[in-house]
View 1 (tube, rainbow, N blue to C red):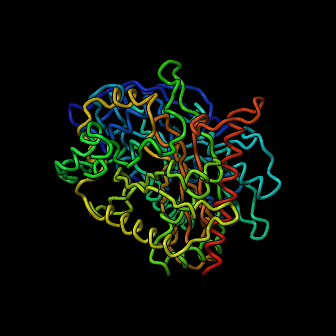
View 2: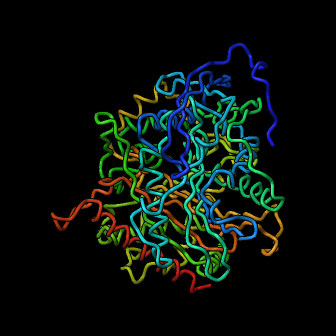
View 3: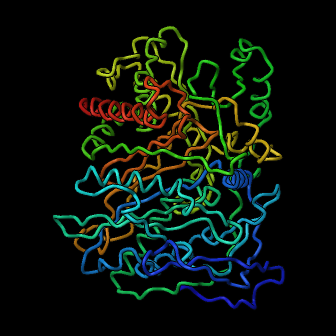
Length: 565
């Protein structure tokens, strides 16, 4: 179990706060229950947040960005777990303690989050009951009778984790902003295994998307070990170990910025557009201009109504067979999956939006924001929770012949593959260097709250974000023989919330080794800026129909690419 630390050994500058906690009730694990008071909750100051951590914390406090969701469908062998245990903390508590012990950020609260000078502090005690919640099928308003209904259930569960006030982290000053949320699914009829969707739900201020992968790796390995050894449940309230946080990933010493890179956005704002293009400087680092499709203007009611932005979710599933065929084609052409997905999305969106004819006129282009993992450049392990992202941008100025009707999407010529090879190399170059990273420019923002609020009502920086967490290998450090496993993971899901000042669409991609690929498409209702043909139809329904067209065409396009393998 976790080592115990004497409270009396805490430094004298520890903060003492009264905190209200909610315990789980027997009838509804993880939700509801009565309040009780821990009169002396102690915190140890660690350090000030880095620029990106501060940006994420402020965005969270403003209600501009809710929870990240990285989840997996875990399948349990019946001889290792009882059905009655699947939605109760006792089954998972020892694994959660291992995660807290290994990842210091899981003990971090953020004091002064609504100020210009917040502080990251370590919570010396953690009550696991405040970090474990059970989702209820009946609340998700759907019946499970087939795999298709299960997909709808997962979609609604993810929407609940993004939108339901009960699942928001509203007390980040006294409780670390993360939880494990479980949803029991129907048993596998062939193997009789118990199946549970387990989500690591967390604030971006504690970690990036790959932090969700790092959590599940630790959690899965600990759960596997504990089930096989029949380890008893851990204590609900634990004391955390003293541990320093690493320096911020975007510290000035780690991400140097040249004067040329720093001044490019400034010069791009003031120079005539023709001169800016000749000099290679732009007002927006993304390269977006007045011809870039970016959906609606940014908007939010959070400043006046105190509401969080509502996120809509749709899920695309690419079969393992299609995925392997596509990856083989990409390898043969010297490119990778991310630029191919971005290119196909551009083709699909041009058709879905009804603007294919404008490509030949040069009136429209698309810009993709691609989050880039800097762990390798910063010599940080992939198994570490924290914020280590930057961004690259892909601009799609398609030629007239690329504006294919839907039946031609996925038919790529050599010119298209050459473009994808160059984009793949560009992404690799960005991920390999520390100098002149977009994320490094955040250190020059003096007031994040005002900066973000002032973006409301303006143009968006890109057409969509494409975030690819890659393929998760859950058995990397465990036996490969399936029969020896107490628990396995069938599939993974990754979803980030909509942001009123972000791109109108997010494509969140994750796969599992030798398995399917899942893409969660998320957006803020109204952000797509499309016209309703039927005045009686809701804006959300109209947008879901467009996203449905995107899903169908994207699957068709990938299948077409795979046929050339």
